[in-house]
Image (tube, rainbow, N blue to C red; front, side, top):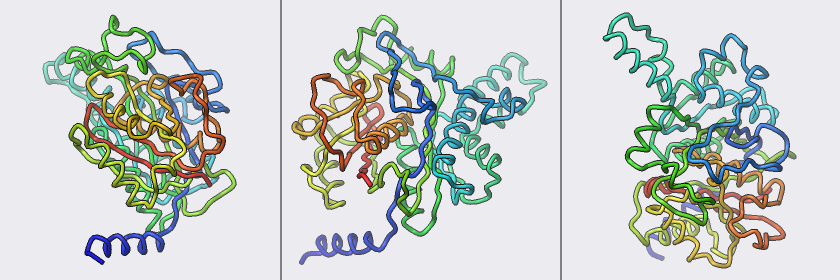
Length: 371
């Protein structure tokens, strides 16, 4: 037996000794009506939109009215989503709060910089600057819960949420219980304009219908927040078992195959063991080719998509995990998530793989199985 085989055996021995990780509560504020009961029962059509705002929930039900006006979009959405996840999991305290964000509270950053210019760098109040930091969301959630435990925010582009999720998974495996993990980002006017100028976002005249079928340069931007409660025991309301998560910053063209096969081998899973693959196609002609590689590798496995429904942002993979978790729990696939409406869905969904990348970088894989 070679060193590589010995290392693999030791890895699986250690893995068996670790606690399993279950998603026992989810909460999502997004461009769809995800705070209401039901799983995409009445989806909103955004096929002609070049920018998608979040569907605002009833904030007053979760946040004191006096505090709402001081909170940015990301903070409000995250407080609601995190509370929904905690309520669903039926826990009072969390062992850790771990968040991932690409741009943080970018709206407050813009406010501070605009004020800096307008007032000629004089008479500045620090409020917007203080609230613009990327860890504002995790801090506000901790204040609301009076949680003084582990609190960390990952800011790493498209890998921000997978980084947070991996941290949460390791916490559970090491014996912690009740870990709150989330990803969030927001739209803001100045940043939107800048991204449109460099063609990261689609122009209005470039929207020709369903981005799953019509590709052009850039994506359709959006915003949102999705949170998950991870625990080490299965419950009646469990959504899925989180098997593993991994990510890599860069892949060469054709490198998706190696990345995918290596991840599955590490988890002792064969390609044929997968019942469904969730893909993050966003209609960008320059980068959706990575998803084409996955499709060509797995022609017989059913696929679902979500960014034509929810839009794109750096932590939209948190929304993708929310979608995959709901698919496993309900054992159903909403028709709106399919590219081809005539596609036959698997009768029983046991194992789902979720693959995402952001502008050709920060490739991530998440493996879930039913409970």
